[in-house]
Each structure stands twice: as structure tokens, then as C-alpha cells.
Length: 420
Image (tube, rainbow, N blue to C red):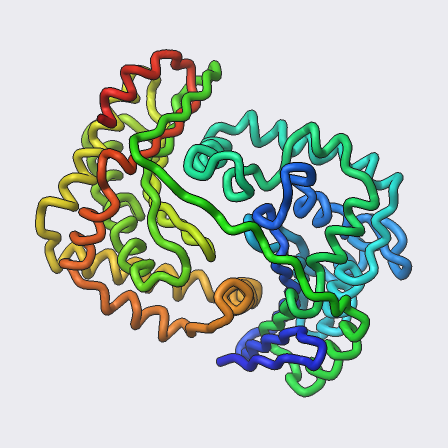
């Protein structure tokens, strides 16, 4: 299914071959996200990602970088998360060499030009403005800020306008030197390619990678003794909210139980909350429950958009379902449906070479272990109804509730009464 190789310099290579496709994805991921930042440079992980598309010695500007893969119909992009950043190129397999050359070039040789930094400030500030004007997205940032407060886990990935305006080239260079290192990087290739040739090519292309010991992130602290509310007043046409609790990190054996629990609650269009809140009461176009796990924290959250005057009613319905899962027995039929949904969704999500590359590289980078698709499904299959109910009892406590709201609301006391 896959091959893992660790080079002498510490760089990890993940190979996921598949002869039944014409595509190849080359993905480089590095353990550098917003959780690795300080108050002074919050947002720099994402800013660095942008700067890697601004030019190298070989491809001196944005046009040269984008045209390289546009000329062969390739798909390319990058992403920044809380715990890692990734750069990838997906191409027809006959252009595999080009994809590897492109990824290695921007990853290792980006100029980080001062003039380009000045121009890109405005771009990222507008990206931030876009997020702030999109409550369906911004509400999750507010929820995480409520959970974790003024520490890296609670900061926004894109950063603050203050930091975006003042960060200088030296800050970029220092950050890259401290985090973009061999031991902190994985190069994953998925699709139709020659493994022997790929190993040789990666060794050659990434031979000059920084060998410095990477800096670790600050340990997260969590403490909650009573319900918490974050109310952001905004004149919107719809109230968006997140209601959830702290849960489990990637290393906990309970993460599969919490995935099943989240699916039963609001994971699909036949879930409890979707049927109750949307179909039976018509209160929301969208409502979903998700479990999110990081290396050092996790949470389970229900998110929805409702009419302003239905906020309290919707929250009450969700809390009732939380309590129901804690108090009542879950049927084997409902459990099986949730597990089959998760397994089927996982299978379908891994049909493409880029998805497979992310699946393997993400696991290796965050947990230093690999579970194949078959092994993941086996973990899901082992979840029992008693475990789901026990987990619900453990996490759905009044003192553990967190509610973030965006909308034209000023009366926080009325919301507090719902949570107490």
C-alpha cells in the first residue's frame, strides 16, 4: 500500500503507488502551522505559504511558477493549518519529473523578496477581510478562540492585521530556518510512478534541505469550570453559531468513538439534528456536527445558521439531543448506519492521488504512525453502542459547554440561561 523511507538527513519519503491511474501527486508537508507561532508573528505560517509562489531563481516570478504547471494542465496549490503546511502538484504521470521539480523548487528556493512581501500584505489582509465577512466560516475561528483563548491554538491561522502589516523579510527567513527542516518535512508521492526512480530523484532534489533541529510548538493548556459564551454582534441576515465541548486528541483511543458520535448527531442528512432542526422544524438550511482532533487537543461541535429569533430554540434542540445520547440507549441499527457512513465516506474520499498523499503524509507528520484504509475501517467497526453512550456522558456536561455566536444579538444573559 505504501513505502516509508527515512534519509540520513532525517527527511521522510512516503510512496503510495497506484498503477490504475494516470495521475501523480507530489506533496511536501512541513510541521509548521499557526500553533508554532508567537504572539508577535501570528499569521507568518500562512504568509510564508503565499510567498513560496512569488518566485525562485529558476522561476523568477509568480507567472513563471504558475505557467510551469498550467502548460501541462496540472493542478497545484498549498494550504496552511494549525499544525502543518503543505505544497502539492498533481499532474498527468508523464509530467512526474516536472511536478517534483516544481514542488522542490518553491519549497527550497523561494526568494522571499521584500518588494513581494509588501505587495502580498494587501492580498492577505483582503483574504482576512473575506473571512471576517463570511460568518459561516468565521464562526469556527471564534469557537476555537473561545475554547483556547490567548494561546496559539486559539489564534486565527491567517493572523491579525497588525502582524500582517509589520512582519519583515528577516521574520520570514528566521521562521523558515527554524521550521522548514529535513526532520520536520515529509515528501509524499502518490499515483502512477517508478518508485526506484522517485527515491533517487527526491534524494537529489531535496539534498540541500536545511538540517537544523526544528523548533517545537508551545504546549497547549486547557481549563474550563463553567459554560462559556462568545457573542459577536454583526448585522447579518442569519445567525450562525457553534455549540460544542472539548474532546480528544489524535492519540486517544476514543477518537473513533467521537467520530461515530458526531455522525449520529449531525454527520449527514439522515442524522438526528439534521432531521430534527431542518426537516421537522425548518429552522436551518445547514446544520452539522463534527469532531476535530489535533496532536494535543480536540473538540466536538455542532454548527448551524438559523433565523435570528430561532437561536434559543435551535440551541435548546441541540442540547436535548446531547442529553438524549447520554441518557438513552443507541440502537444497533443507528450505530451501524453511522459506522457504514464513515467507512464509505472514507473510501470515496481516497479515490484521488492528492487525497491519498494527504492521507498518508498527514498521519505520518502528526502522529508518526500510519493506519491504512483497511485498518481505519477496522477501528471504526470496533465501536460499540455502550462506548458511544459513555463518551456522551463524559463530554456533554453543562460546565463543559461552549457557545460562539455571530449575529445581531446583544443579550448574552438569555443565552447563558440556556447553558446553565
